[in-house]
Amino acid sequence: MADDKTEIEKLATLLEQERLLLLDGNLEGLGKLLPEKEKLMDGLLEGEETPAQVFLPLEGKLNQNQLLLNGAMEGIRAVSERLAALRHVRTSLDTYDANGRRQQVTMQGKSQVEKHA
Image 1: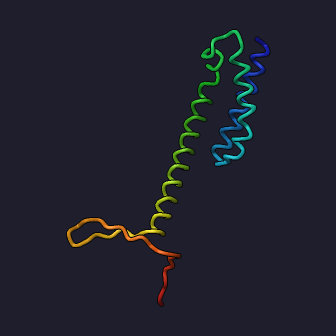
Image 2: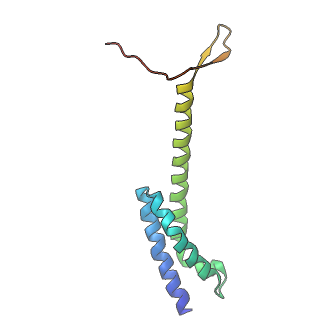
Image 3: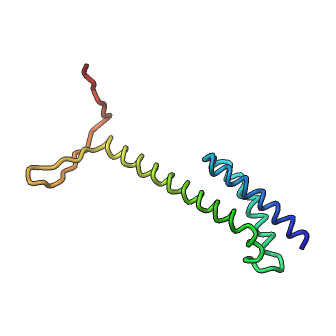
């Protein structure tokens, strides 16, 4: 059990590091923590206690990090969608005909905007 306490403390410290990385938007750093996190969690799951009992002291940190991770994923999806929309704008133009039907005009070559003073 003393070993489990040490493992729980190690995981608590790692979860705090994970929280700080999430707040900083450091996704690369999160990837570097993942192998250690998996190792600690696997070690705790192999113990005699049920998983719920093992992770109960860390529930708040786990939930907080999950919320931060979900927010980061939503942000990444939003950026991805925005970049796709920008690519679409660069390659095509949506217009409407006299009857209100949407038409798509595909742009050829490199599109440039000319500015006049």
